[in-house]
Amino acid sequence: ILADTPLWPLSFHNIKTRAWLAYDQTDYDAMYEILEQGLTLGQQQADPLTLFKLHILYSILAKKAADDHKKYAHLNEAQALLLKHKLADSNLAVVYYHFALFTRDNTKAVPYLERILELPRSAQNYWIQDIAFERLINHHIEQKEFTRAHGRLENKLSSSIKLLLKAKVYQAQSKPDIALPLLQKAFELARLEYNNHTGL
Image (cartoon, rainbow, N blue to C red; front, side):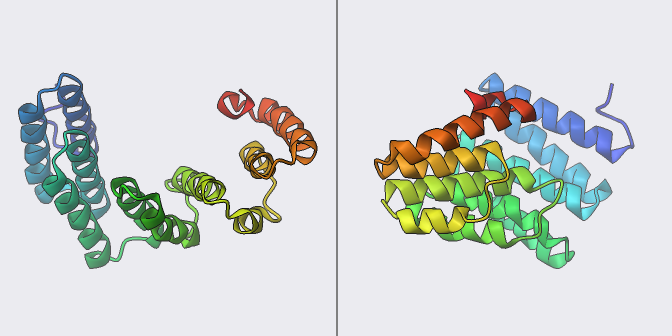
């Protein structure tokens, strides 16, 4: 029903849904065909921001289908659209996030994660910034860079996840007496936030 609609937002939703469905059915040829049709239609109808999102979707699905060439090609296309159309810098978070995800060496992901945290926070990128922050703290813990981890968390204990991360740093330092009150506070705050994942 939506396939021939002239309304781009509905068309984009249709393309996105059909592409994910084809991926779930491991029909990668159909998935790429849908994405290519979407790009053709998008270049005629879409605003630059939605076309950017379509390239990001293409890149994500290409990664899942283990196609490195298409993965990077469409991530670069997305970044080019941001620069060409001077889209808000906050949109760069998703680009940097995928570069961080695509690198196999966590140390090489750190500059991307740090850059994400420097970008303006928005309704579209806040979750990416939160994941980037968590990944950075976990990386510091793995590398036993406890001073850096504490430095990033200083004056940022406003949410249950950040309390939990602070407790994890103390646990890694074998300081359970300091970690336990933070874990208890994180649990209570997670309950208030209805954050089941952190609460567990």
